[in-house]
Length: 177
Image (cartoon, rainbow, N blue to C red; front, side, top):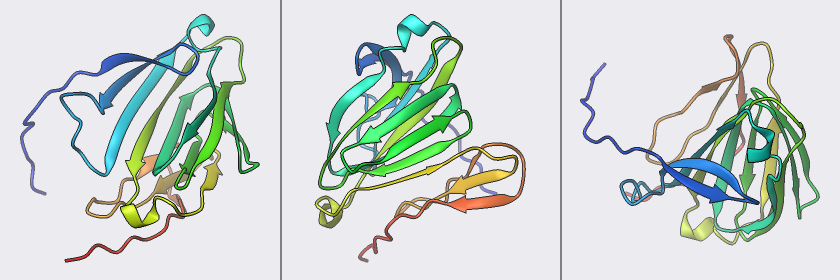
């Protein structure tokens, strides 16, 4: 295995999103803004309900994919495609906004720790006006998720130790050489 040294340290910025929720953004900051296809990486974490209970009411997205991984807590997803998701600790959701979708992510708990992250992945130009799509996978005793992004290695996410694999269905985009 080829080990490379760290070239840059870029601290996350605190950003207010949704209805006043503080997130910590690492990708999508002035220090890390040209990492296409990755647009943003937000981490949210609080045990204080006053800091997350207002959530992320209806808001639009277009032209990219969001990948959300809940570490702790419980969020409900609803969108203009008619999907309703129940995202709990260890679960993941994948939403291809593509030509446009309006959605919300609202806490379903009134106390306790709410923690997770959301990665925004740019779609290739030819896919930006394609149909939106949604998938959700709940945590399991032995579940891992993986997907591929053109030009990047496979990225597994483990909900717990084990060997079962759930693949997030994503259109394959051929890269031209």
